[in-house]
Length: 138
Image: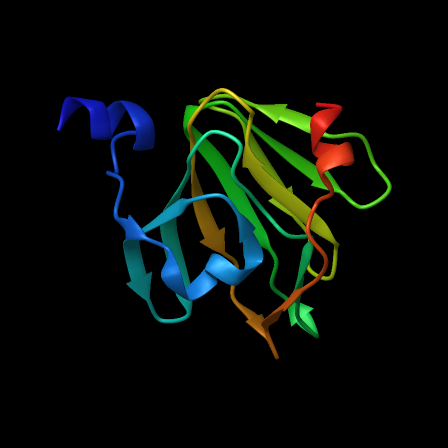
């Protein structure tokens, strides 16, 4: 149990994220924390080197995502911008309709709370993987 908490933070590791595996390089885990009236909060844990593909949280009004690091070390990057290192306590507000990715550093587990901001006509559009060359530069 202690090892699981160290990896995933207070919220726990959860189950392998099989539903989203096609959009990740490496192993990730998903643990629902709170689901209520259009608000969803998940603890997402990435094994070292794991990251998700470029993606966009679409919405015609409101929407987006908030990412709060709870354990380990990871990265967040918006299309056309420099990567941002994330450690426990760091958070990023992802505006709707902004292409981005996030994931673990090469040698650390990374866990974050993913807070889906309610929006109209909300959906996630998955894009291409983060290239090995791109990731290798971090």
